Length: 369
Ligand SMILES: *[C@@H]1O[C@H](CO)[C@@H](O)[C@H](O)[C@H]1NC(C)=O
Ligand SMILES: *[C@@H]1O[C@H](CO)[C@@H](O)[C@H](O)[C@H]1NC(C)=O
Image (cartoon, rainbow, N blue to C red; front, top):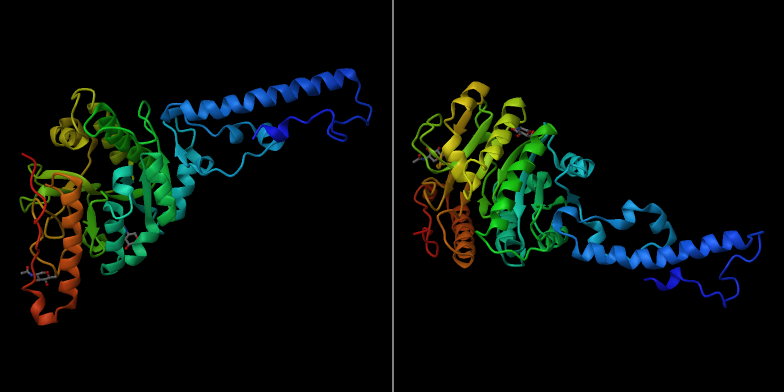
């Protein structure tokens, strides 16, 4: 890469001899070239070792350098990185805008490298949109938010709206262990990211990737309710704060109340160190402060938004099925595929036989101890 930057003075025409450049100008030019020759490899090295939160695009930051020698095309230079300090605000806005429905609503999911591999969770997830009822067109409104570089690369191969979000202090290349500090930080980064989305005025449906979409959930969302969340178990009353929410699926309307909820939720992690965002939500959902903010929290029925914890009993009504209550990636993928299999079988039934259809899951999934 550095080779074209260092012209050999023995080469004729390699150096501006004419045009009146005196010895001073020549010394300056030599110094600049030296700088370029030394600085460029250093920058490349810097990129390679920089921690995730500060991953930068040196050529973009230093236009004079790019003008001097455009780096060879490298996928890494395309990383759409949202930095924690909001400096990539514009990029976030652009991706959301491109994916949004007319009413500024987007569908968001977050992806890591393990779930992004071919044949893994993300493939079953996207397949569900293709086989579901009126879900195909929803893919145009889906933004896949990658939490590491491998996931982001895969996203760009298979989907139109991809965004990468780094977590400060977590290796963006994805070499982390689940349930370690880094994993927890990524989960919390997601909450902070969703607050950013709301602040930009975009409402969203957040969906985990281990959910199959079989029908459009839009008609099943409540007309009122700022924050609507799916449940592991549904008590039957959408306003009952005793419902156990599952953060894997939620509809959030962008307004000052929901921005405040996400701000409060994110801040609450410090009072509850070591806890997952979902556990903290469960602890704060009844807080007096949130009642004062005036946010309306509603819980979605498992009849429409089911899961392995509590499957929807009605395939004629179900919108989504979540591989929750499931330990291990292999069992999760196997049961998600079974759900699609059950769905296809259901769709092929004659109308009068449809009421008798049922799930064959869980077959591989088992609950955490
Ligand atoms: C947003 O627009 C879509 C498509 O027109 C519609 O189906 C959906 O109900 C709207 N969402 C909300 C929450 O109003
Ligand atoms: C299943 O859902 C369909 C569509 O919403 C509904 O018409 C039907 O009554 C439901 N069946 C039962 C048993 O609840």
